[in-house]
Amino acid sequence: MRQRKVDGPAVQRAREDAGYTQVALAAKLRVDRSAIAQWESGYTQPSASNFKALCAALKVRRDALLLVADDAQVV
Image (cartoon, rainbow, N blue to C red; front, side, top):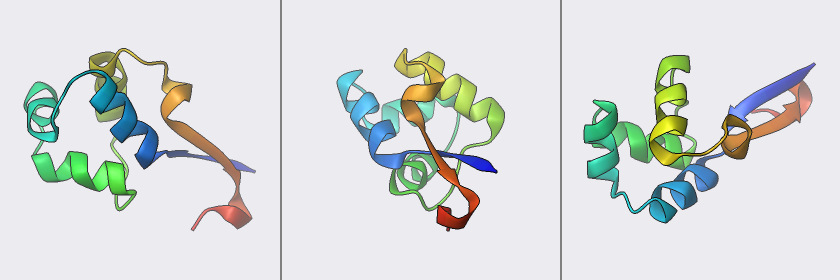
């Protein structure tokens, strides 16, 4: 089975390319700045609704921020 996981470094690159700081993006998404940092580091994953809002704010397709791996590879 294939798992989808948010690619933290891709989130950081997309955020920087869009000209957002973690603080500014967090304010736009109405989440704490630490949530953005945790998504970028891979420590946590955004909820489905936050992921949708993240993609919209960064003006990227969902697949641009996702990693796809086999279950055995996902930790």
